[in-house]
Length: 432
Image 1 (cartoon, rainbow, N blue to C red):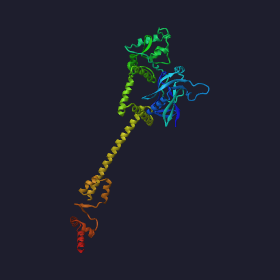
Image 2 (tube, rainbow, N blue to C red):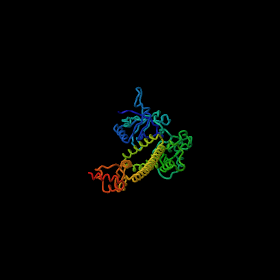
Image 3 (cartoon, one colour):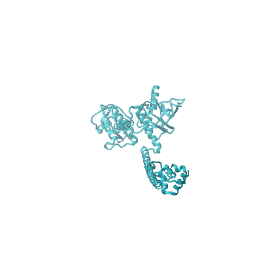
Image 4 (tube, rainbow, N blue to C red):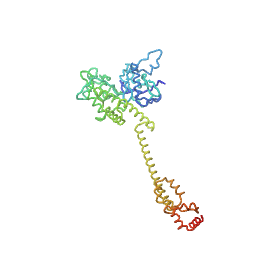
């Protein structure tokens, strides 16, 4: 059965032109937990392509429940793209009204509407702007990261102070670069992050990487590289909230993509993933996506099993369990060793007693050392006494039939040790 469901996620930093809709693995919401696999992603993508139209962003899911007395305007339009970490909205075009609402932080969250089958997400209907979040620990949609701006890419030496001075003059109304003449929204375009609580202060803007050439804002390749280095800790790093770092890195990474490269952290992650996939024996892209989904689902299962939300703590619990299991295994092995030692001592004592009782001959001793201990005990309890050289000691008066079955040596031994019995048996033989 196909069921329409939705959940709510905070919109990523800046006024985004792209953002992730669903991660692979479990999608946990207050309205239920759904699964989203690479196969589900391909199905969602194919459904959208078959439809042949751009998907819409509306307000509060009005398009799903239109009012009878008025329009249901769109807030924006977008396309879909499947990436290694999930399904993304790309080429997002916001309407002027939506842009203003997002800038003023009047909307902070988005809510995808989708259909599910057997707990799997199989079709995306649309996305809505909303202020009723249904998930926890969300990445902000409207934050302090500056939206990506492409522009012409230039190269050469990078002088951040000189570039900022040129940007100030470019962003000012009269070309002076003075603070009271700055168009702050225009000025913001040259940076990757700003303090939204104090937007009309030069000190609120960080990570410059644009310059001005012939009156146009351009992307400076060396400036982008310098910003990336600072994000990775060079020159003491940069003091921006942890919640904004991911969005700022996406901004800088998009500039690297302009000249066909990947950002340093993307290369690091790709190298790590390559090692993981190699270890898993994965080669093609489809298998890679499936492997990633399995890893994410496996981690989610470990987290659920241990009751620790922090993956590092969950791994710690698993290691503690493994150590406890190792200790139990070692103790079990020691118990087995002690049991074997006790059994060996008991066996030696039984063999000693059996030999003393004349029940074990040298020929039987090897068998006694190899046979099961319970079998040995049973044998010694029931076996007759062997008096030597394989001669059995009679434990009662013999019948003539029994006497006749005895060997010469057995009769000789009886003669030496029990002359009376020997004479009686001889007399009985003569009478017969």
